[in-house]
Length: 276
Image 1 (cartoon, rainbow, N blue to C red):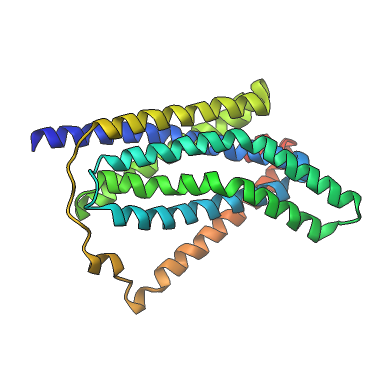
Image 2 (image 1 turned 45 degrees about the horizontal axis):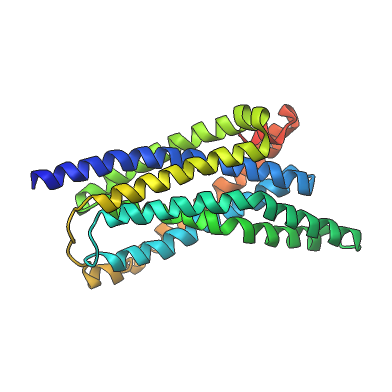
């Protein structure tokens, strides 16, 4: 029991380290992709809206899909394997991110081709939005899948859920703050798009390799299978308003982010500085 607790404490420590740097890389990508699409659109608001939509859609999709998949694996694999799965997602993010600039370059060529053939206005912007979304949703979906995996790794009692999740989210958000500031004010001005992307992807790959090795070399034991009744339980009818309120609050926060970026761009003069 003592050894198992020590192993879990070690996994908690390293998971927090990984998730801090993962938050930083996620926001570096967000700032970087916004900058790249601004060069395509020539318009900050459209670039910000495209990146935020792809980011949030991917996070939601990844959380849903990977969350259900990880639930199904409970009771079938050693608990530490969830850290290895997390590492594979981080590695995928890094590999795919390296290809995003060339792929967004193809989106720009398609954008220019459509514009030169008379397409303009909303149809042109929608076409670019779809193309950029297809490029950005895969890595953001992987980002969304990281939280359910770490939750399955670290939360073994219902009473620990709030404490552990709040710590993970807090560190991830703190990393995001650091990443956004570094991207806009240090990395992009000094290194440019390509070198910043390579450096950030290497961080993801380092997280991935470390997490896979640690997850595969640690044994926590196979936990009990999830209670099917609790897995399929739904909210009481009277509580449907709670997820609705969360959805409305999320939409409002994204609208604020786009509006504030637009307002700051008028005074700061640079989309990268304003977005950061």
